[in-house]
Image (tube, rainbow, N blue to C red):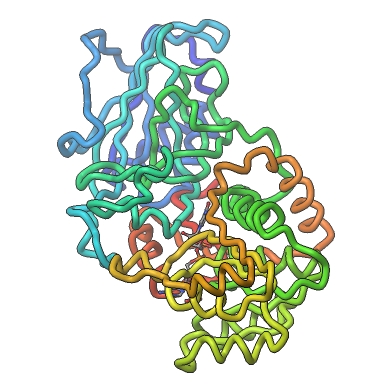
Length: 438
Ligand SMILES: NC(=O)c1ccc[n+]([C@@H]2O[C@H](COP(=O)([O-])OP(=O)(O)OC[C@H]3O[C@@H](n4cnc5c(N)ncnc54)[C@H](OP(=O)(O)O)[C@@H]3O)[C@@H](O)[C@H]2O)c1
């Protein structure tokens, strides 16, 4: 372990050249840093770390901006006066990392040329004042709402701290899972697994560490923490139980039913005793909803032109609950088919994200005379349900009552195509990118 190293100065050299890195890994293993070395050796496409006992640097700490210039091929990670884990003293660590940024604001559907992969350095200072945490990213959650952050203007950017706008050139923060590399925060130690706000990058420096939560243990695969046991799961749970206020036998319609949130809403609704119909964009997805996830019925919304009469066919007795992930005409058609005192949970309006001129215009007389409740919501307002959500969902997973749908791409280079795929309907279930192996 790194802390057993009895030396005055320990200098770690980070190299981005694979051949150099391979040689470095050998040095690490031979030096007795086998865990660290092996972890690095398993990772693909990322910076690799070498450690050697050459001298340290005592000069002033360079201020390296997050979006600073391209780093040199080799960088130094320096631990100063780090004698033993029980002795907290000053040290400085610098790591070269790769991150994705936008070249310009994005107003329509995202395309590859909107983005670029860059490199920079994170510097972690461990001293009495700093609470920062340096994290090696394992999984990044790929989420549609990020597109609204990438626009020059979207009303969502004023919504909460998660949805603030991103400027071109800026690093893009995102929900995900990582492993602590080094910490200046007493709440986190090296090798802790953390869940929270990291970024579209292979290493993240969490300022103050307050957007991270330490994961103590988990009986489930780590990736679940960014999907079914993460924000997607909480969104589905809170939206369905708290916003839709279901009753047994209610007739429930779910849009983007094979997506991350939608598939869970449909499964919660079935387990609760509702009649559930979902829609999705391909025949394969529709078949899966009916045959694997146990939906009562499902249809491909891209077939047929009149959504109102389509919904009338699937709900001859009307809709009690509509869980809306889509907005636009789908919301209008659902409202037209709602029963009196129906509830609409407006979770997302993805059909409007790529076309800012598109707006749902439901018949408001329907809303009034049928006393329909339409409520937007954010998962972030429902953390009071977190305990219930985790225990109920964990029980469902353990007993095999709920299916887990994950769609995982690999490597930082795949983040942008994974993101674009959300708006083409490429994903089935929770879209994640595994940045490096656990
Ligand atoms: N309120 C909250 O707190 C909260 C939290 C998380 C997510 N959300 C929202 O919930 C919705 C679902 O998010 P998610 O993470 O679960 O994504 P997702 O459903 O896993 O992925 C997006 C899916 O949307 C569908 N889609 C894309 N463009 C569409 C269009 N123009 N019309 C209809 N469907 C389209 C595609 O499936 P098809 O094959 O079916 O077309 C695609 O696979 C999004 O609107 C998101 O912004 C809200």
